[in-house]
Image (cartoon, rainbow, N blue to C red; front, side, top):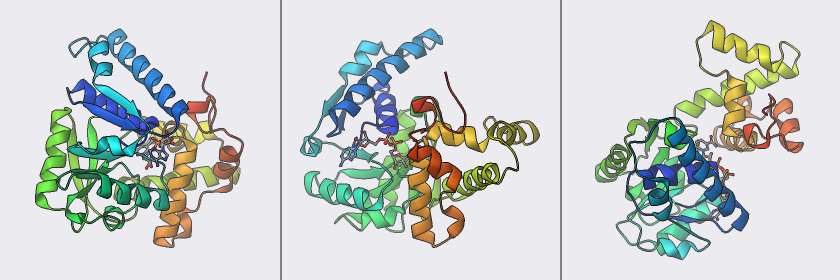
Length: 276
Ligand SMILES: NC(=O)c1ccc[n+]([C@@H]2O[C@H](COP(=O)([O-])OP(=O)(O)OC[C@H]3O[C@@H](n4cnc5c(N)ncnc54)[C@H](O)[C@@H]3O)[C@@H](O)[C@H]2O)c1
């Protein structure tokens, strides 16, 4: 794994629970400490919720190795990149992974919407690059959007799907393009909902209540944005705006104001909604 944030820690936990040995690379020591603590909490919660059939928490945590050095991934059979949603950063990480990893290593990205082929272009193995768009919280979400780039080989796609099967998850394969399928749609929905709040059409509670009550969505768009993390939503919209040239993806003022104030959603206790 590259990146020990929300997704990196969650995907690492899913892999370790399934019996895989995992190495997580993150140069930020504080992020690593937080990830370790989140993983312990999540494993404890699984026991409290009665999901006792799996391995013991100590067995799971013993399978996860934390490091600041990307060169420690040299023996990995699969690498899943989970760094922030910035095109330049991900391109740099993929170029580095291509240098460090053995020729057969499958390189996957958890990107929310940067085309897989753009990341593949930073490597000398575009046939071995695939998108694995896990959902948050990764240990609890059973379905993954799998992105097949135009140069992803059938063997690489099969390996990615087999990995998901080993985690007890189902991959749904889609084609490549900005935002793939889910975020091409979801980011427009969040952007319009946030803009409507800014225009005084409804407050955040009312907006989410409409989607939840009228459409039967388990979580309205603004609560979903809070769960994703508003910094990540902001970065994803910015990348989609840049990649598509479509201004509808531009982060609305209400979202920008929350991010600038440090209200990033659930992880900081406040976003469009408050969390205690
Ligand atoms: N948060 C979600 O709900 C969600 C869902 C699906 C996909 N994603 C995608 O997953 C990716 C990660 O998102 P996140 O929410 O986990 O972000 P995050 O900000 O929580 O974590 C990113 C981590 O990457 C680390 N990092 C930065 N540069 C690095 C480098 N060069 N090498 C190693 N680590 C580095 C940071 O220290 C941080 O710990 C993004 O592409 C995002 O769009 C997020």
